[in-house]
Structures are given as structure tokens and as C-alpha cells.
Length: 259
Image (tube, rainbow, N blue to C red; front, top):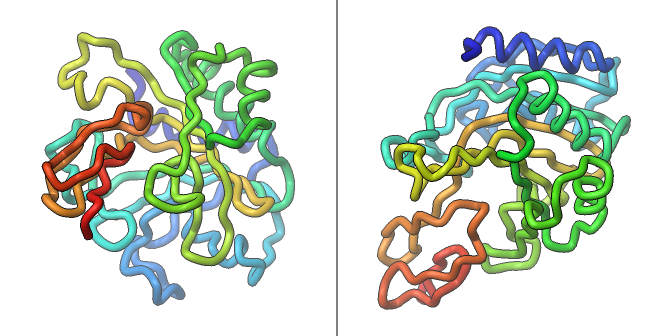
């Protein structure tokens, strides 16, 4: 098994060889961003680039960003201990394109890294896409060779248009777009398999012409907004309808019908 240092080195070197600038990790406390207490994602140091307020000397970047998720939009505190994959402090490996390559290259890079560099067995991998993203489906199916039954379309499962686990947005306004994720199936014998059998390995997000591929480990879960009970429905199984309390409607993301 590779060490953390080896994984980090493999990732950064893979993208450096493909023309990416290796950018050092930014501080955990952003120096010029009053909207965040902590750096909570690998894209945070590039927010001004995404917004068009900053232009850098490179159009491709890669980084291993130290992150804290202990409050705000991305808060993993409630998940630590309930899943085997959530942390409050971690490193997020990311590759970013600022008006350079787009969807096809980002997908191919992610798949190549996982299957050729880290030697993950392709038969253990499955992907999710935004439900209307036929372009991503075609790339995965016809170019990469992922079987259609292993490409799962995720719709608007959070109660509003474009409110989906496979539609990324930086905020209520600003860069946004469909994303595609790769999951690793640990198998039925994996400890805690009912909750953690599949682990997200890579997220590839389109952001108004800017692409980022962030590699992290985590398994999204949901709470009923009324009773606060957890519904152990991972992102790869949102189609499974379930109730989490008597006042909830059986929606795909256990969203209570009474606010």
C-alpha cells in the first residue's frame, strides 16, 4: 500500500508531466477571503481566477491543498465516526484548467491516473454524472469504455433545479456546472459495507469553462431536516427512495416535507 507521501508525489508528478504548474498548498486560514474561516477545498486559492478577477501566468495547475471542514457550507464534523471516510482535516489533491482543456481531457486524466498509475481495477470502479450530461456519458462509455450500467445519472435530488450531488456550484451566484465522480466498490465484505462500501475517489467538475478534478475520500450522507436522523443513502444510491421519519416524504435525499 502506498504512503500518503507517495500518493501525493504520484498525483503532482502525473499532472506536472502534463503541463500543470505545481502550486504549493495555501494557508489553512485564507488571507484575503472574508467569506471563509478556513480553506475548505482545493479550489479556494483559485477563487479569483474562477471569477475572472485574477489572471495567472499558467492555464493549468495542480496542488495538494490542506483543508479544514468544521463549519459553514462544508461541515464534516457530524460525519466523523459515523462513516469510515470523513475527516475534518485532510489534503485535497486537485488539477485545474483555466480556459485550457475541458471535459474530455479531465475525465481521461482522472481515469488514467486511477487505473494506470495507481493500478485500481477498472471493474471495481463506477461513475456518476449529472442526469442531463449526455456528453459526459458518451465520453465515459464510448471513449473510456465504462459499461453503461456503471454510469449512474444523478438528478436534482436536493429540492430545486440544479441542486444535485452532480451539479457543482461555488455559491448562489458564480461559476457552476455539472460534475462527474468516480467511486470505488470495496465489495460486500468491506467492514461497514452497508454505509461505506463505495468510496468516492475523484470528482471532475465543470465551472463555466474552467475545470477542476479534485481527489478526496468521502461518502455523502444526509439528515432529515425535521427529525435530524441520518439517512444512510450514499451518492451512488440516491435512486433508492426511503423515509427517515413519519413526517418525511420518501424523497431521494431524505428531505423532510415540513420545514
